[in-house]
Length: 184
Image (tube, rainbow, N blue to C red; front, top):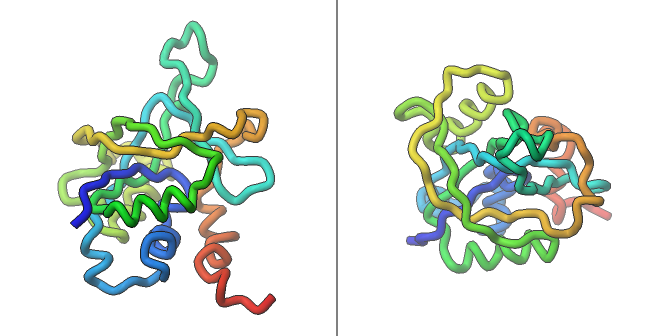
């Protein structure tokens, strides 16, 4: 069993994309899925942006001092998933997937949801849907140390707009999951 814990805030929040990257297939065997624990989480003091001409986002750190940075407040938090049980091999494949536009950083995230809520892939989607709908019944829980991929390829490549996970799932995810099955 793996002992790596990572926080994902973009395409890898979608379990089929995550499994495709680390297992080579969007629908892995049950034993492969059972090795991972996926929970909704929030990362404070960062902001997620769309990357120009790309389907994926990047995050950058923002100031927590309202006197020095206009990007503080609710917009300076990023919703995502914290995944534990990742192996060295999984992290190697994730590093290759992320490429040179990002660097890994240790961060502290807070797990979201009520007790027992948000467990497994279906539960994560439910909690994230509630958060995106503006529901505040979902609370922040325990702090977890994790590693995440922070954008380093230049802020000029980032749009001001927030990256939209729902739009990605609706418009782009099928291609990301099934890209090798399409006839070119």
